[in-house]
Amino acid sequence: MANSQVWCQEESVKNKTWFVRLLLVVFFGIVQIISDAIYWFIYRYKEKTQLPAIEDPILLESATSLAKKIRTQKITSEEVVSVFINRIKAVNPIINCVVDNRFQLALEEAQKADKLIQSGEKDEETLELETPFLGVPFTIKDCFSVAGLHYTSGLVKRKDLIGQFDSDVVALMKNAGAIMLAITNVPELWMWWESLNNVYGRSRNPYDTNRTVGGSSGGEAGLLASAGSPFGIGSDIGGSIRLPAFFNGIFGHKPTSGIVSNHEQQPVAGKVLQTYLVTGPMSRFCSDLLPMYRILAAGNTKKLKLDEKVSLSKIRYFYVEHFGKNPLLSRVHPDLKEAQRKVVRHIEKTYNVPVQKMKFPKLYHAMEMWSVKMTAAGNPPFVAELAMRKGQISLIAEFLKYCVGQCEHTLFALAMGLLEKLCPPSTHPLSVKMIEMCDELQKELQELLGDDGVLLVPPHPTASFYHNQSLTRPFDFAYVAIFNILGFPITQVPLGLGAWGVPLGVQVIGNLHNDHLTLAVAAELERAFGGWVSPSPISC
Image (cartoon, rainbow, N blue to C red):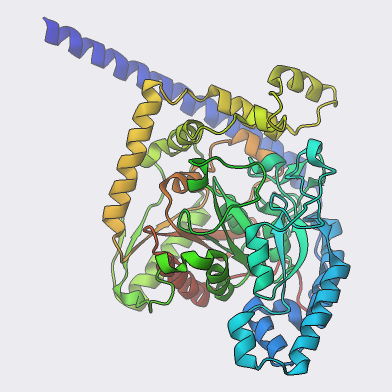
C-alpha cells in the first residue's frame, strides 16, 4: 500500500512537471513567434548603415604583424596609431563603440617608441623579447581602470569617475610596449548581452547596424570587427568575450579560470565570483591571441602549456549540437548547425580522425546551474550594485520611473535585477540539486576531454539578433554562460557569414589549463574557413 502511494505521488509529480514544461514550451513558442514577427516588421524597411571602406592596408594587418614591421622600421608606430585613430573617427559615428579615448597621448607615446627603435639602443631581438608589441595600439572595454579615462561601467552614477591608475592587464600590455588608445562600450554594469547604457547609448553591429554587438564586451568586439583597433581586451563572466566575438565575427579567448588578473574591474567580483570571471584577448586574427595571452597571463604561464607543440591529428574531437529541448532556450538555427557540420567534416577529412557527437543531459539545465552558482557566490545582489553598494534600488519604483522616462537605468538592468530575485537562494533544495549537478557535469567533461580532447559547441542558438530582442529570449546566453562556472578555456572562432549577413561561429572548448589545444584548433579553423570577413568594402 505504501509503495503504491509513493508510486502515485511520483507519477503525479511527473505529470505536473510534464504539464508545466508543456505550458512553457507553448508560452515561449508563442512569444518568440510574435516577437520575431514584430521585430521583422519593425526592421524590414529600416536601412542598414554601411561602414566606410578600408583604404589603408595597415588596417588589414594583425597586431603581431604590425609589431614586427614597427620593430624593423618598415612602418612607424606614429603612422599606425594615426591610421587607427582616423578609422575610429570614421566608423564610430555609425557603430558607437568607442566611449573615451587618449588619442593625443597615444600619438606622443608612438613618437617615443619610434625614437627608441631608431636610436639603435636595443637591437631587434631585444625589442621583441622585452616589448613584443612595441608601438602597437590596443583598446579595452569600459569596466577596467585606465589612468585618465572615464571609468563608468555604463552606470549613470559613475559617469564622472576617472580612472586614477591602470588595471593590471592594461599595465601588462603597456609594459609589453603596446599603446593604450581608447575604451569601449558595455551594458550597464556589464550584466547583459546587448551593449546599451544610459551614459553612452547603444553600440551597433558593423555587419548590420539594426542588430546587436552583444555584450558585455560588445563595444570592443564591434570596434575590432570594424578594423578600428588591432586587438583588445575583454572580460567574461557569462559569455562576455565569446558572445560579442561571435556576433561580430572575430576571435576571442576565454582563458582557464584564475590565469589572468581581474584586478580593477567594476563592479568588483568577490572571491568565488573571481573564479567565474576571466579576462582575455580579442582580435580579428587568431595569430594575436597566443602572444597576447602570454602577456596577460604574466607569471601564471607556468601553469599552462603554451609552448607545447600541438599535433591536430592526435587530438580527440567531440561536438554538441544543442542543449536539449529546454523551453526556455531557442532552437539552434540551421545556419549554425550547418557551420558546425562543416567544421566536423573538415576535421574528419583533413586529419582522418573521428569527431564524436555527444549529448550531456545536464546541459538542459545550463541556465539554472549558472544562475544558482552566481547567486551562491556571495556577491552583493545586482540591485545593490546598481546603487553602487549604498543600499539597493527598488525595482518597482525604477520600473515605474522607466514607464515615464525618468529612470537612469536601462530596461536590461532592471530585467537582470528581476531575474536575480526570481532565482532561489543557495540553500533551497532545487539550488542544492543544481550545484551538485554542475559539479557532476564538470567531472564528466574533465574525464571526457582529458589532456588531449576538445569539444565543439554553438555559442548561441542564433546569430546576432535585432536590438532589444534579447528581452524575448533572455536565457539563450546559457550556451556560453555555463562554461564560466565550469572554468574551462574556450576559443571563439568565426566561420563566415550566414543567411542574415551576420557572422557564424563555434566555441572550441578544452580541459582546464589546455588553452594551447583550443588556440591550435582555432588557428586551423581560421586557415580552413577564412576567419574574419570585413563588414566594409576594402579599397586598398
